[in-house]
Image (cartoon, rainbow, N blue to C red):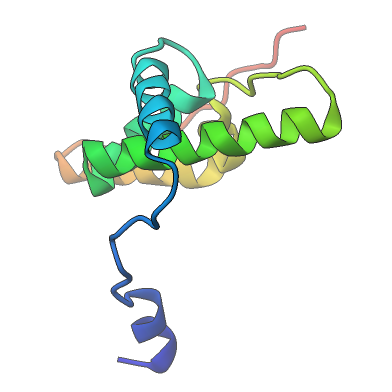
Length: 120
C-alpha cells in the first residue's frame, strides 16, 4: 500500500470538540428536522452521509452545515438559496451515470445508453 493510499484511509478521531451544549442540541434538532424534508440540499446531504457513516454522525455533519450556512448568511447579508436535492447528482453527472451502469450490470443486465433529444 502506497503512502497516498494510507493517507486516504487514515483513521481520524470520531469525537466532537467541546462547545456550547445548548447550541449543539439546538442544531441537532434542526438537523433532524432538515433531514426529514423532501427535496432539499440538507436532506440529500443527510442521506448520503447516513448511508456511509450512520445516522448520528450524519446528523452532526448536517448540524455543522446549518451552522456554516447561518454564518455565511449573516456575514454576506444575502438571502438563502437552496441548491436543491439533486445538487450532488448535477455535481458529478458522469460519475453517477457510470455508477448506476455498473450496478445494473452487476445484476446481470446489459445496458445501452441512448441519449434523448433535448427539449426546448
